[in-house]
Image (cartoon, rainbow, N blue to C red):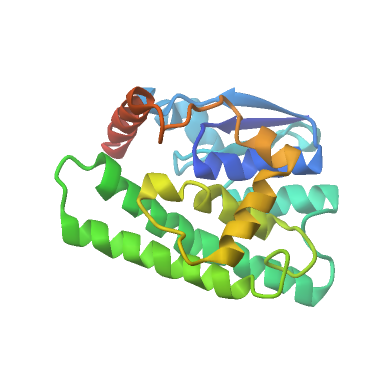
Length: 228
C-alpha cells in the first residue's frame, strides 16, 4: 500500500493521476497548505523541502519519495508501465518530463503568482511569465506533430506531467489558440477515466473559471502559502 500526502494542485495531481493510471492501491491524505502543515516536523521528516506531494511506500519499509518527477519515475518502474523500457523511448520520456519540471511548471507557477496571487499587479512581470508559458506550449505543439502522445504511440508519465499543468492554462492567463495538436492532446488525456479520477484527489475542486467565489478563496489560500 502507498500513502500519498498531497493537495489539489498541478504537482499534486501529477502523483495522483499516475497512481490512478497504474491502478496501484494507495491512500490519499490531504495536506492543508493554508495551515502550513507542509512545514510541520512530521512532514519535513518525509520531505525536507516542505513541499507536496510526498509518497510513502509501506511495502518498502515506509520508503519516502519526494519531488514529483522522482515520484512518477518510481511508480512507473514499480508497476512496469508508463515508462518505456528501451533506451530511446525512456530517454524521450525523461526529456519531456524534465521539460515540464524545468519549464512548464516553473513558468506557469510564476504566471499564477503574479497574475492571480501577488497583491501588486506588475504587468511586465505578468507578461514575461505568460509569454514564456505560451512559448513552451508552442514547443509542445511542435513536439506533438504527427504523434498521438509526446513519445509517439505510447502514453507515458511525460504526458501526465505536462498535462497536469497545461490543463490549467486559463488560470495562468495563457492562450492555447492556434495550437491544434496541443488542444487535441489535452482533450484526449482528459477523456481518460483514470486521469479524470486523478485530478479529483485528494478533493475535487470547483470550476474556478466559472465559480468566482471559489476562485477568490483558492487565491487567498495560495497567497498564504506564498509567505512561507
